[in-house]
Each structure stands twice: as C-alpha cells, then as structure tokens.
Length: 302
Length: 43
Image (cartoon, rainbow over all chains, first blue to last red):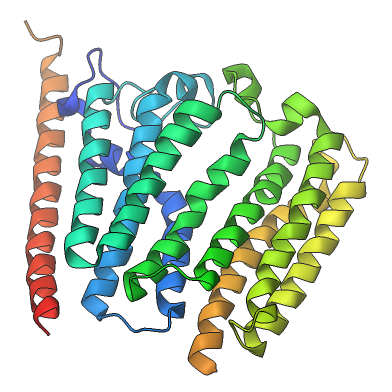
C-alpha cells in the first residue's frame, strides 16, 4: 500500500490502491454487516440483485464519506503516526483528486440507490454521508470531546438504510438498531482510547480521556452502557423480536454491563496494565456482531 | 518542464496503467450489475 511520494502530487501519481485507501476499507466491514442485517431482518424479502445493490450502495456511500473525511483532515492526518501514511499526507495524491473522488462516489451511490432500490433508502444514505462529513468531520470533531458520540450516529445509519431498502419504510425495530449502534460507539471507542497512546491531543482533537481525564471517561463508559443495553433488549420487550434474540441480547448486554462496570471502577492509570479496558474493547466488537447476527437468526429461525 | 526523473515517470506510467485496468474492470462489473438490475426490476 505504501508507495513512493512525489514532489508534486496529482491524480497521476496515485496508485489505484490509494483510491481504495481513501475509502477506509477496514471500517466498511461493520457498515456492510449492519446494513446487511437490517436488510435481512426486514419482514419483506428483497430481490437478491436489488439487495446486493443496496449493500453495495451503502458500502460506496461509506467509502465516499471516508474519502471526504480524509480530504478535509489531511492536515490532521499528517500530524498523527497512525494516519501519516494515508495517500494525502504521504504526498501520493493531491487534495482536489480526493475531493472529486469522494463527491463523485457519494453522488453515484445515492443516485444508484434511488434508481435501483427506492428513494427513502437513497435519502437516508445521502443524510448519513452528509452527517458524517459536515456534522462530524467539519463541525464537531475538533470542537467537542463528545465528538465520538456524534460520529456514532453516522455509523448507526446502515441498519436503517438496509431495512428501508427492503421495505420502503422506517419502523421501530431499525430505529432501535440505530440507537443500539449509536449508544454502543462511545463505550467501544473510549475503552480503546483509555489503553492506547493516541496522538489526537497533539493534533488538536479533543478526545475525552485527554480532555476530561481517565476518571470522567470511565464514568461516561458506564453511563452510555446502560441505555445501550436498554436499546438492545427493547426489541424483545416491545414484542418486535422473539426469544432467540431476546435471551441472547440480554445475556450479551449483561456481560457488556459487567465489563463496563469493571472499567468504571478501575483505578488503573498505567496503560500496559489496563486489562479490563482491553477486555471491554474486544468484547464490544463481538457484542455488536452477535446482537445483529441474532436479529437475523431470530427472524430466520422463528 | 516535468518535476519528475525518468524513473519516476516510468513509475507514474505503471500506476496509470494499473488504474486504467482497475477502472475497466469496475466499468465491466457495472455493466453486468445494471443489466441484472434491469432484469430484476422487470420481474
């Protein structure tokens, strides 16, 4: 991936892998998975070709948002070790090319969704791209330590889009799935932020542990986990899913709560010794994949 | 005046070629996808 930088970066100096890197392909797995689960959990079946197109559009839309994020944050990425080798800060591509690529890909994904699937899913896709780029990246990320909370909303849209693609409607269950991802994001990221040394502070991004301290971050992790667990169990409590999901989600959420409490009451300040934080972060990924998998399993097996 | 050395120009050509190949493959895949969408919409 890391190819040579040139004195004058243009579209011509970029490899195709650099365009792929602009889309943040590693983030796409969660987006595609939750979108697919939203689509499969819907009560109405969608033609497989149109279903594939819907998931493709979700992935392309997320890729466009990632590209526009890198276009806007090239200065910031250059200051952080983790992101310094991205195509723009590394000098393999110019900013205008990234902007054109992001806008073009985003417009293509929304138009294709609108023409091939339905207008509602296209509209939500457009809102999710604009939300991530304008509200999160441009407006809030550098201004508030709650930035990750807002960013979570952008990651929560795919399940809603998948459901809307299959049904043409927005209903309570996908809204609860949206809430679940939205409330899951803060404890997930803050657990990670506690035990890794990020250079966000040096780049001027107010991440919670750096701004408010470890104690406040631990309390916030516990505070967000409670409504997250409620959102996870709510579909069962409201009669929208069966016992397979209900029991599974309750057990998983109970486990999440326990791990969050361990993090919350820990006084450890040395990052190398932060085992509960590592456990919570690792479990949070499993948690999201399993709860969404259970939603689909519940529908298929019930 | 190009700011690139002959070696760099050769590398840029190589990248252009790889981009062209990938673009062609994507366009081919889109042709198949649009055809499949058209059929699916008619069903």
